Image (cartoon, rainbow, N blue to C red; front, side, top):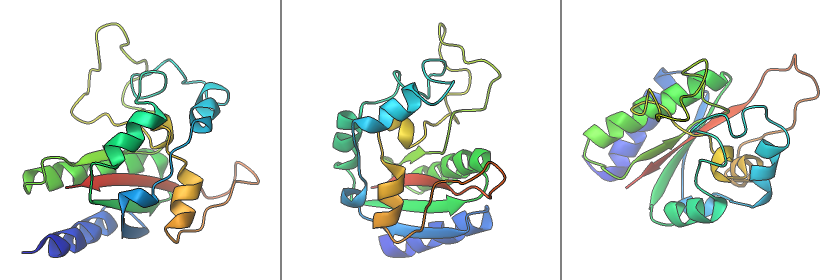
Length: 170
């Protein structure tokens, strides 16, 4: 099976797990920016309270270096934020077991695995906890738009949410 066949297989697995749309993208189309962390710091009550949130996550500069060490990525869309991170982790794990040892997953929104993060002694769920793209300085809006998805800000809390996960491959 070729690498492209494997990537298409992972697209199918993502759809089976609940993704509504999936695209194989090039990592250079993923935008990082310094302002993204400010949205976490001055807009999210989890800032500094989780090992999967800034300031404990990679800076946007480090994230850019990480992204540049990959050949391909899989960007996927869901309507369930909590499920997005779980899907990203599960499929990334399968990709790892298939021999792509460099795979890395990013979820959506703050980690919800524990009621309170164990900041002093370390993560209680390191095998499944994943940071969100935005926690690592990825401009999710620009990235998804540059890759052909539509994403708009919510006008009210009652609207269906659009969430995105990212899996780096190779």
